[in-house]
Structure formats: structure tokens, C-alpha cells
Length: 81
Image (cartoon, rainbow, N blue to C red; front, side, top):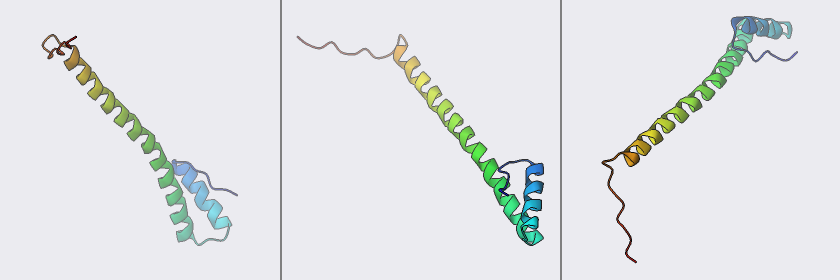
């Protein structure tokens, strides 16, 4: 039976029981279950980091736009014709 790729303690407990039914030693079953739980939790934080990075880049672009649109921004020189 495949392991549950969840981050909850209930999922970890079920994974331990599954591994022990498969004949693994209790310590090895716990190590596998904790690794699966850790991997599931790490997957969630990847998306959170992407959102934080995007928000930071968006704030940076807003700052640039505000400086360019301010009345005291340097004017672009006219091209000679």
C-alpha cells in the first residue's frame, strides 16, 4: 500500500503502521514516515517562498514606477531633428 503524502500527524501515524505491516522495524518505519512528512511540509513552503519573492519584486517595481512618475523625476532630453 502506498504511503500517505500528508503533513499531518495522523498521516505520519498511518504511514508508520503501513511500514510496520510491510515488515519494517519500528525505528525504520518511523524514520520513513517522518521523512515523508518532512517532504510534504517542505513542498508547501516552496510555494510560499515563491509568493513572497513575487510580492517583493512587485513592491520594487511599484517603487520604480513612483519615482519615474513623480513631478521631480528627471526629464528625458528632447531629440534633435
